[in-house]
Image 1 (tube, rainbow, N blue to C red):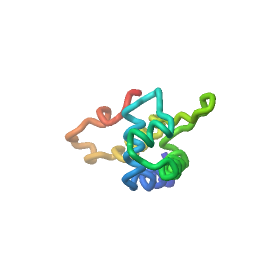
Image 2 (image 1 turned 45 degrees about the vertical axis):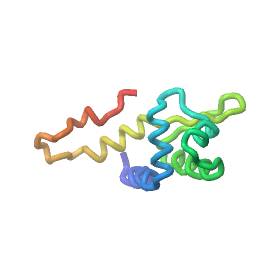
Image 3 (image 1 turned 180 degrees about the vertical axis):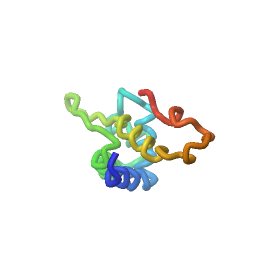
Length: 108
């Protein structure tokens, strides 16, 4: 993963609402969520949510798919796992770590 991609992803997650939205999408998994369901479930106004979703999509952490009249947003697990791998690549300088790197990777 390129450093510029990592910086973009971390910048996107460095905002409380975006982090909350991303975590909700990770929890829900493959079915994803519509903006309406997210707005209602997270208590975020629709226009605010739209702005934050756009930032997460731009960072590559979230995908957007049209299903009939709805937009479905999903966590981009490959991008998330790539980010985690980048951050833990040289963990503990080859010494035993408290958490094995494989435990930090989502198998979704």
